[in-house]
Image 1 (cartoon, rainbow, N blue to C red):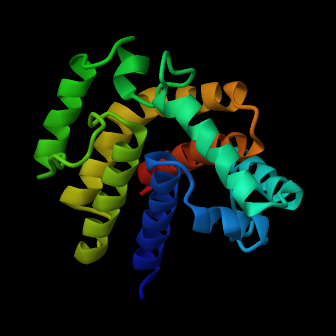
Image 2 (image 1 turned 45 degrees about the horizontal axis):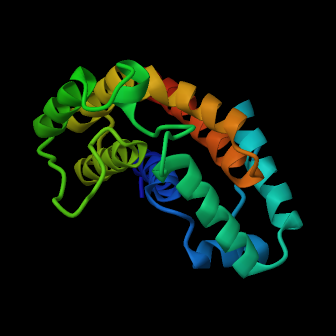
Length: 210
C-alpha cells in the first residue's frame, strides 16, 4: 500500500468511527470493549490538542467503568436525551439548526444538491434528514473510499471532499461539538465531542495542504 493509500485509509477509518458514534446509541459490544479496556486508543503524539484531550477523557472513562449493562443503559439514555428526544434537543445534530436556526431550511437543500453531485441519495430506510451529523460523516467516509479506489489525492473525489469540508462541516460541526462538550455530563460524549472537533480541524488542514 502506498503512502497516499495509507493516508486515505486512515481518514476513512476515522470518519467511519465517528459516524458510528452518532448514528445510534453505543452498541453493547462497544460498551464491553470500553469496560474491559479493549477500546483502541491511538498514539496521541501526532494528534492535535482536542483529539488528545478527547482520547484521554475516553481513557479515564474506561478506567471508571465497571458494569457493562449499567454503562450501556446509561449511554443509551444519554444518547436518547441528547439526539432523539422527546422534547427539545439540548444538542440538535443537524446542520440546518446551526446554519439556519430551524429544520428543513435552505442549507438542507444545498446539502442535497451536493450529495446529488456525488451521486448520493438517502435510503428510504434512513429516518433522519440528510443534514444529520452521522449522514455527513458517512458521506466523507464514502468519498475517502472512492478516492482510495482512485488511488489519488487529486481529481473529482478530492475536490468533492474539499468542497464539502468548506461548505458544510466547517460551518457547524465545531460549534456542535462545543455545545455537546458543554451540555453532556457523561465523559464518554465529552470525549467524542473533543475527538470530533479535533479531527475536523485536522482533516481540513490535511485537505488544504494537499
